[in-house]
Length: 462
Image (cartoon, rainbow, N blue to C red; front, top):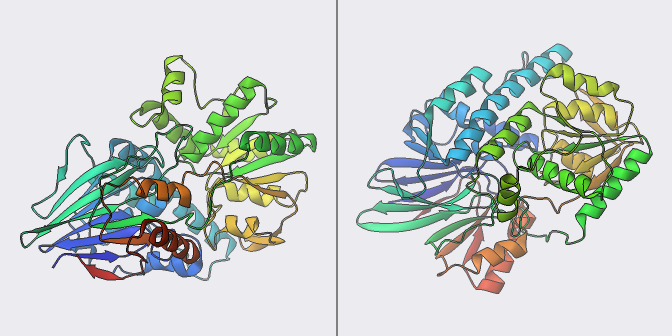
């Protein structure tokens, strides 16, 4: 019998992994890292409930680490199949995965140097070299036709509107002369976005897995540009730094796009902008290369010769020396640095310096998962642990959610409401428990669909 098992992003927003099995073959949809609370992170070190070598294929909805970052470990543990994704996702994964390996090695090395890890020695989940090796299995798809993996699995892709290359994936599962369509929403984007076109709507499916990150919230509809300008201008007046923890893929490019527009239009004074993330810099070049997901405004700017992601006084700090030099800046500046939830990377060092100074502002512009350093700071903690010691929080803490790349519950319901036919069963995934339960109630109440919240390691018969 054909089955579906939830190996991640069930009861949490991270670790996206779903396993389909039919006719003795196995297909994994997404292969992400667990992030946030220690209990979740430890799952990255636990063996999967199935042998990695028994999985025939992996297909990715998009390149964010919580959807792709476990791939090197899967290959290290014996996976020898092909990994399929859109061309843009493949290009992004070629940056994301080695960077993840490098950061894990760097964090382990730093923990050993400082002696704050309980593990002797601290080890990375996988290395830079193992991540580079995993790239050999990546295969870009041709979206113009269904991808026939075998007589048991075929795939169709629909624009998800989340980040460049992101797709919802419809898998037709065939066994014993019967066929079932299973639709994975992936991370759904928003309507009327700055850079990426809105999500496409499939006809429907027998089974639907839909994200619920913002299942209990609506995004603010205030003038976020005016608020962004106010935050930056007031921080500059104090002589402080605006530090923005930002995802290297998607959010950084949107920030640069917005800041360029505001500075060119005169609604924000020109302030030096430093992008302190080698990966974000490379990702920005990929956004300039790929135009298949561009909305009309982005496409028009490109035709006019405008560099959409380059504010007037922008600096791309690629080297470690350039990053360290930011510590010595004594004038107002905007620093955009990864990671977006402050779980690792260069932003942690900037936080360690900026948090104790009341003149500075830490601005969160995306979802902060439970247990992440970003959520702890955002929630009003007086101090936060970094590099083995507590750092005082005296800087101003601000949040602007309008730039989120995730659909809120209204936008998810709008997407679902356009289905030609309802699914037999809808599973809420990729959301914290309260958000998932809230969206479940809204789907059942407004659409009259059979909806349930998926459970970790739950297995169903299709």
